[in-house]
Image (cartoon, rainbow, N blue to C red; front, side, top):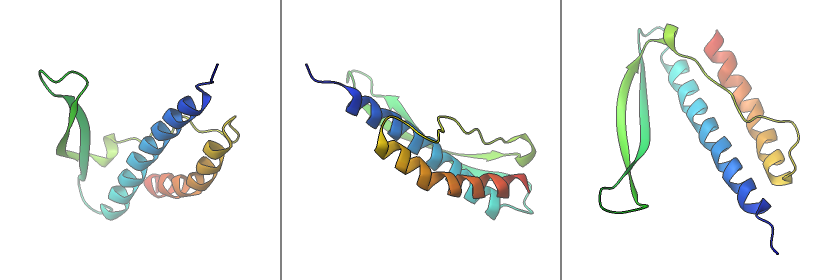
Length: 106
């Protein structure tokens, strides 16, 4: 019987990468918006296609956010994971995330 550990690892890693990308884009927006009254954020989501079971389209939207009412949430971070590749990816992303969060707090 084959294990699904590899698939679960890939799904978790993709979730982490998605969160990190949101944080990185948000951090770039925060850094670029220093001195501006609002943040311009490009949001993407997946929307189910009517009458096409299991198929989705990408919906894009621009929003203006107040920096004083904006937060960065870090989740799914670890210093060691049972999937070595996931541990390596997080080790590479963590310093970049630290820079983004530090910039956002300044």
